[in-house]
Image 1 (spheres, rainbow, N blue to C red):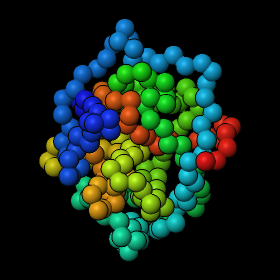
Image 2: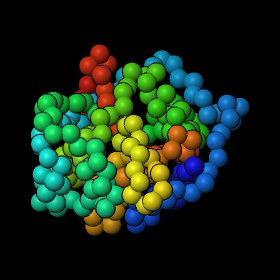
Image 3: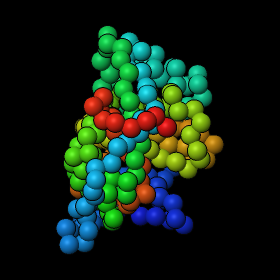
Length: 208
């Protein structure tokens, strides 16, 4: 499992130049402060609204991303092709961008704990299509920013092993990427790591 640490005050990318394989990490116990205590429950503002279902075929989406100057890792392209459904109904979703710390964790938390805490706060996991849709909509991403899409991991057999991946929107060097790192339930994430969730219509808070 991943042990996401910080480097010079910024989240360190364990995947390097590619989507990469995670390093082994550790899982914190309740006595170490993993389980958050946060009162009152925060109201998360809408960060971005993206449209889903605008492309009937996955290669049309790939072409749109490439025309806009974005890069797609080989694994992200493979993931997009495996999970695409034709004739999707067009709809919009409101997204919330939060760090692990903003979810109330004072120390590392596992993927499972992050997802559970977000649900407690009224957030939902993203449809997988949010990954490429956000990449297309987020043309001015700050350098060195990595945003992980909170979604049900998708099993792939790309490398010959059985892995589970999520989409990730990243600005690395001079390139803005759609990537698909391997993410497991027990992977540990430092408080500075950024995730995107869907904000339910019932949630309050102004757009920012």
